[in-house]
Length: 342
Image 1 (cartoon, rainbow, N blue to C red):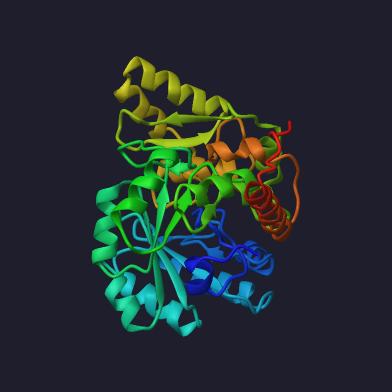
Image 2: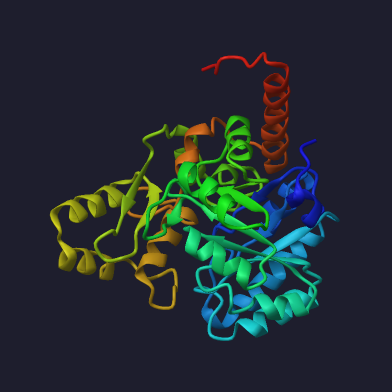
């Protein structure tokens, strides 16, 4: 087993953490990741619910996860999703026995001290060195560096994992976890070589039996190759990586043409029957990820979908990647590293 400060702090067998993934991070998936030896994470709004119902929605998914595993679990607190009263949401997590939280989508200073006062272990997601230093200064225990390869909303600086991870490792003393583009044992070994003490994976868990996204989305991931994602909505300041669908290609074309007004009108025309509190972008995400509309919907996914060859249990994903990494590390130590195989 690969042991690092991350495995020690989190009480897990292998340093693999599930990404939060907003809509996609349901309780059954989190339990399966934890049962595989990693750290399962219940997202801030599994399946999507109204703003007023999100705290209770997360509570129910946590209970479903706890019914399936006795191993450590984590809750994601996306400051953009949990609303204007994050303390209430944090109180619920404590009530449900959560010991680890990962914050994202805002300043680490918002909740870190309160969470630490509760005795929680706190991780925070960053996209550059400045944010990592701020996280350490705020008392965060582990910083997760999310590179440009990741799915969903991207950092404005567009720094890749290959540059971001060693830069952050050199800048902070707390443990660093690499995220963005990781979905194989080779990638895990690369992250460790860059100085990370673990990896976070989101897209690698989308096409698993326990993830509650639509089967059409899972099949699209399995069918994708290394060019299977595109960047959209750059011109309106909401840069996102999504799976390549007809809708995504329309966005890409508008970005290339600089058609900002057309893009806003296109987004406003998105069907709103998914009850997304008036957020058309999330309507499109729901239709793609949960509704299975791979023509008109959006589906956030990272470049690591290139490594997904079949639908299998999330527990097996964790075990397989960890086992591959252990073999490669042993070969490096013995000076007999094999050439990469197709």
